[in-house]
Length: 273
Image (tube, rainbow, N blue to C red; front, side):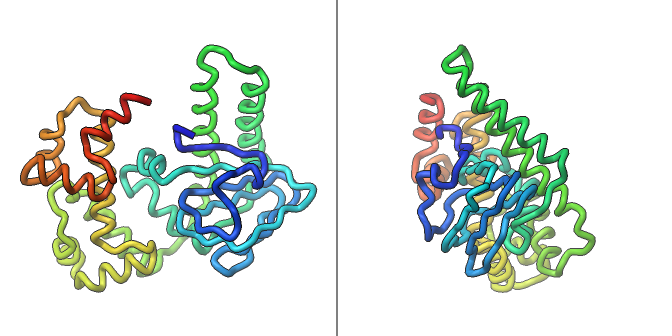
């Protein structure tokens, strides 16, 4: 749990999912046999044999039925872990656009075998019991299983031939954001770059993702700040300057408001893990 990615054999084993529920983390379902029927955002979705379902945070799941012959597993990833894995929006958001309307995809026998191989390695590690580095090995296998499942899904979305106007605008916004978030935090700046009004930009992003333009900008800045606190030797003043804050105090207040913890405490918490 401390690494943010967990694998479960049964839906009933997941302690933080009790129906009905609004997901606060990503959920990947791999079904090798049987079927799962779920009411997701008031639409019924069926996950059949040899298929994967990807649900991002925010989905509402009303009820879920698992067939008696179901075989497969469930992978959950906390939002904080997703931010750590995908600090750059380029890597994740283009794929997540398709999760709402296309949560379930079929997979071929080779893809299913690759997922089952990783899962079976985890089960074998658990049966072996405590050995040196066994926990680290299990954590790495959890992450590998997550990457493999998400990678299969991403390979399908890359094959989509045409983007809608909303998707094109979102892609353009992400491109401008990635180039400028370290120095620009004004919604007006990004709207001007895209030749639309700030109101239209925020409304479009809110409709697609549930977040306004300002929230997107803040999230990108905070993700980068956390990445720098985790992976660099820069002190807080240097990070503050690199992200174009007027002073360390303002950066500290901004970080604590959005992350719920000060930059210094965040870095201390990491060293204690």
